[in-house]
Image 1 (spheres, rainbow, N blue to C red):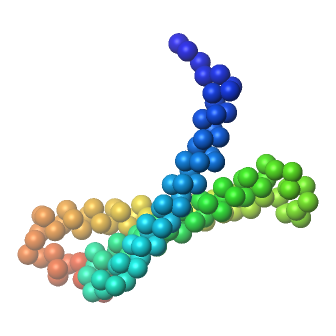
Image 2 (image 1 turned 135 degrees about the horizontal axis):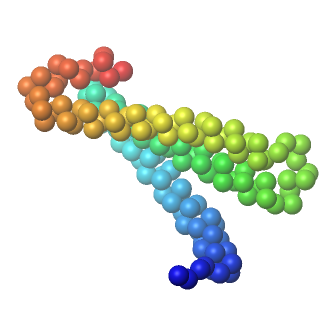
Image 3 (image 1 turned 90 degrees about the vertical axis):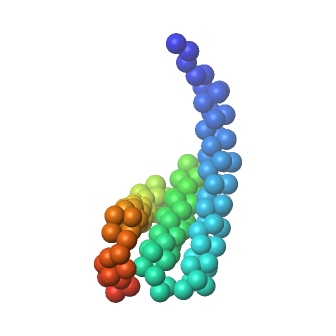
Length: 137
């Protein structure tokens, strides 16, 4: 059984926290912003479009809060923290609380989408009467 050395661990953590994670966050923010624009232009007449729009907004807010939490963590571990009147670790914990609210909302919407797809296959003739615009909103 081989172990990972401290240098390898630091290199991997640096690559993840400074390169991979911020790049993925920028791509996710851009993609979700494009999704929101696309679903608004398509129109919100269908219950599935509404759900996809809300899912994109929820994911966008989650990633934005994740980015803010990452920035707060970097500031908390830097020498700048000593000059600030508030602990950035506390700010990061507060941000994380709201971040998981949007993660839970996204999970609920994904579950709703899975149920609607299942019902669309199981009850194709009654689907439009069950999943209406008013019931989705």
